[in-house]
Amino acid sequence: ITSIICLNLPSFSGGMNPWGIPSIRRMRDRDLTPSYVDDGLLEIVGFRDDLLGLLQLGPSRQGTRIAQAHRIRFEFHKGAWDHTFMKMDGESWKQPLPVDDDTIVIEISHHGQINVLATHDCVSRSVFDPPFPIVFSDEDDSSEEDFLEVEVRRKFGAAPTFRIPDSVDISHLS
Image (cartoon, rainbow, N blue to C red; front, side, top):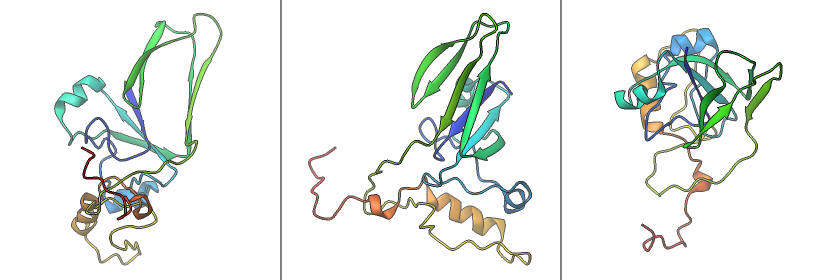
């Protein structure tokens, strides 16, 4: 793996979904959950190639699901390179790496929560308001197609409480 993406919502770089939609079986086997914007989890995804190349391949590109976690910690030690490239919220920077026995630590976690605005016809949902009930059991009679349909309709979750109130006129905003 040469590139790692840490996601807190299921959309990256204009609609790419690197986490993808795991099959029901894979979700059970690896103890994964669907990706929601407000579930407090980071999706850690690895790629074997350069991120720039991924962006050129389009939104259907999916990586290797490494983990879901509340936080992740990267430790950089002295090596052959003196820097690495990083990006957060669309902003890139060149991160210097240790040149001696020091360690550089970067930890990513959820700090808080912000409101997300959505239009009245938005199909986005939060973890607390899924569009359809999803129940997993040993005698699972739902098909993967049903689950995929639910995931496709969900988009990347804004909770109904984040909707613009009816009293607010948004016609002048564009």
